[in-house]
Length: 291
Image (cartoon, rainbow, N blue to C red):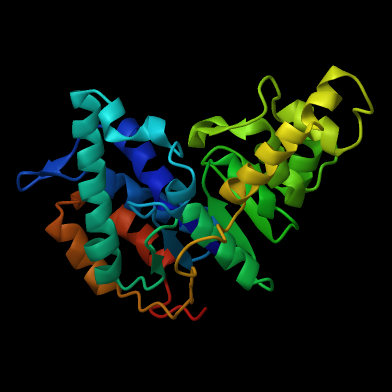
């Protein structure tokens, strides 16, 4: 079992769900919460094999669809929101470039033009003999729940292929990208067919809509053109990038002494208390974890 973390999601969750901590003049609450979640996940799923995926600052999707995630850009936010986002980015950078490598984690991925979802999808696709728990909340990731070897976890619920098919009337996960191409994706600012939501798109794909105004609307030439435009934008991994996405898993070199040193440098005395440190030693009992 390997845990793949959508680090964009987890760091945002920590920024808004964790009270501020600081050490030596710098805020550290996002890093602290992130590492706390790593420990909880390791203990819950009884694995010390982690893969960390980060969003790129730029997006290949924007080159063909300028409105992509336009509503999330800094010029659409208040000064207070921008200050929080800048702090999230700073601590996320610390995690990616300093904290995780210092401890000995090696599978830390970010590639220009791609999102963490793309990286996660490629890892799942290319390692078909492995079991994964993907820590994320994005519904786009439903499309690779093709078997019980892949599950989604949002810190509340473990979501499986069976859950998906129960919720969406037996639709297969590999059809989910076409649902989003029809209905659009509000979180990514991808416009779908006006007035058509996910549930209606599911019924259309399952053949439950045989005729009528809604059927004719989805089946029109204009809608078909929109669907084909949207499909590459909502499919994972994105396949139209200028540079091909490439991810190779390697062997970790987790070192508990370096972990303890790192926690000391960030003032995370809580992790160094005997009871808590015992948990870290239990979770990461092996010094080197082969993939």
